Amino acid sequence: MTDAPQLLIPIEPLVASWRAELNGQSSVSASGVQDHLLDLWGALPDGETRTVVERWLTETVERHRYEVDDIERRLDRLVESLEGSPTDTEE
Image 1 (cartoon, rainbow, N blue to C red):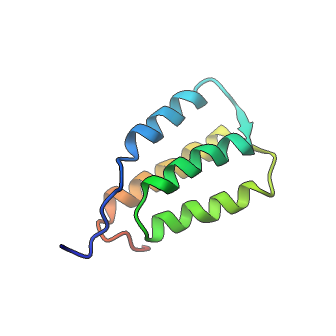
Image 2 (cartoon, rainbow, N blue to C red):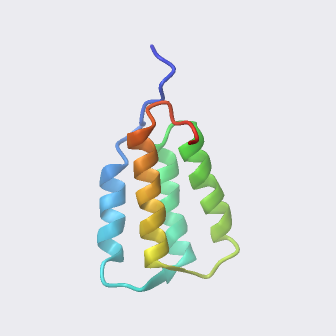
């Protein structure tokens, strides 16, 4: 077995489902963001990407709404970090 993290379940379907829900909206509630982040957190192995999701989850407690553009950018970075970093390390 290698030290490279293994995804517990693929996050692509989770991200695609979330993006579909966001379609046509300009902002969404922080509690809705939190629900989706918990799904992502549970699908990720320990590592930097999971830590990023944990920080985002903590932030949702202090916010009421999120702009969809902000969520989309963050999701892009999460997916890119998993695709571009097989060892799940910071750049």
